[in-house]
Image 1 (cartoon, rainbow, N blue to C red):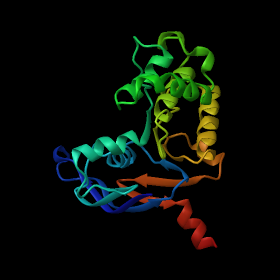
Image 2: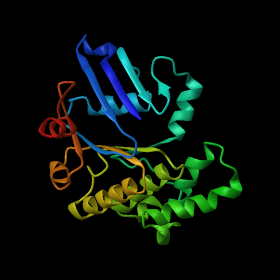
Image 3: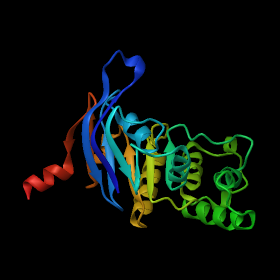
Image 4: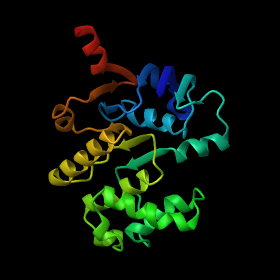
Length: 229
């Protein structure tokens, strides 16, 4: 479903140094994978290439039938409608309620208005926030705001959820709640790719771990398991 084939990425202002170097990896449909590594290792570049904010300098990124080598701007919009993307800083609209933030994701993709309230209600229920539908972001805790961000990402029924440090601004209790939510989302059939510095989360589960350093994949637990088997 997601495939990187010998992907190198060099940013124009980097002086020629590569953010990614010859990265090859495959993430299967319905899989849960952690993306780990120190700051500057290449994690964010991997995610930007997935939702086509950036293109490879060389190599190809393929995701659910779309290819970075020939994808058009119109198809990039189509692809992003099928992805759920969650960031560390929530990125909620402060002048909209929880349900308003989730509805916005449907409005911008042209979903017929009569269908929006039902979809929003289901998404908020799925993340445990049905009772906070009319609350504004300033009235919600950090964990609750992140759940709104998850509801917004899920409301279009994505085939993969991309989470960039989703627990980075949360305390331990909220982090556990968000991680359980991610597990539930994955159990429902949605693939999850989670970039994180939180190695306690990684060690507490048996999900796949892909470790980056200096733009390269330096460890992949899926490869380790295959070699061990």
